[in-house]
Amino acid sequence: MVTIARPLPRSPHPRDYLKRLTAQASALGHRILSALYRIDGAYRASLSLREMDDRTLADVGLTRQQAMVEADKLLWRV
Image (cartoon, rainbow, N blue to C red):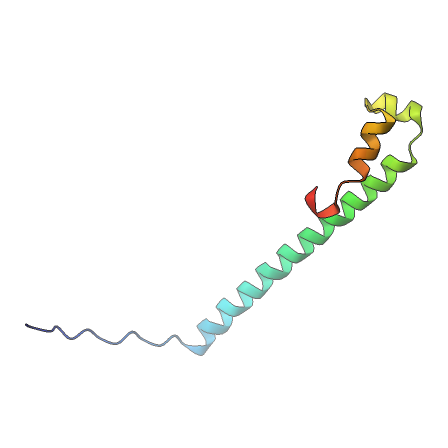
């Protein structure tokens, strides 16, 4: 059996590693902030639905019961 020697993979330069790590941390921070903004928006919408009177809900096309179902949804499931 003949074995062909392969060159060892070149180790990445520390600067390249730091660039990649920084990009990954930035992307993670962006995803976390996006999730927090979505949850905040859902929370504010939930509060608005709870505070609307029946006439306003009728203008939107919702009944009081439908509005309460929407307002009671878990914030991270919106």
